[in-house]
Length: 242
Image (cartoon, rainbow, N blue to C red; front, side, top):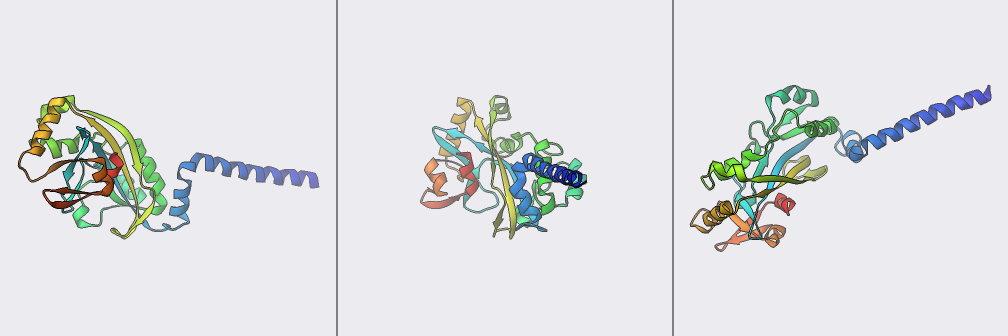
């Protein structure tokens, strides 16, 4: 009888240990994040997400940047925040997703959102499914280049958007927003036809409001550039396109 009880106990322990190890194998990608958001520093808090795509556009060995419309005297890569669709609303309720809190950063349907910490991993898994959200990255190229009459809409037929990688900031606390935050940036290399590159160069070299500029790697790493004697910041996210 003692042998039978010992065998049963050993089997039960083995089952739970095996199940636990399987859970670790299945969730190792998010294990630390699960600990931080369920029993650690971000437990019972809202986590801010900003999920965007950024373009690496190189012309003559330099990187094309655009003036930031929300932050004065700052440049950043062309690109923008992904949009969520109305079909996301039910899931938003389920995962306790709320919109951006800072008024100057809020844009309708942007994936700048807050997610209850216990649902962070489910939210990340949803994003990877590509459902209920924008997946086409041409919108910002149109808004920042085509709509400004710098290139013509026909140019889109020849532009190549090649996915390079995804930058993941990991969970961190940000003083700017007073919350824990995760930044995800899909990086795309944009290849233009030579005549479109030339049009962009002509635009940059012509008298203008410095809407677009070309900068070197060193400028990006130093997070600043001087134009006509004036110092400008280069957004921290710009380094992700290098």
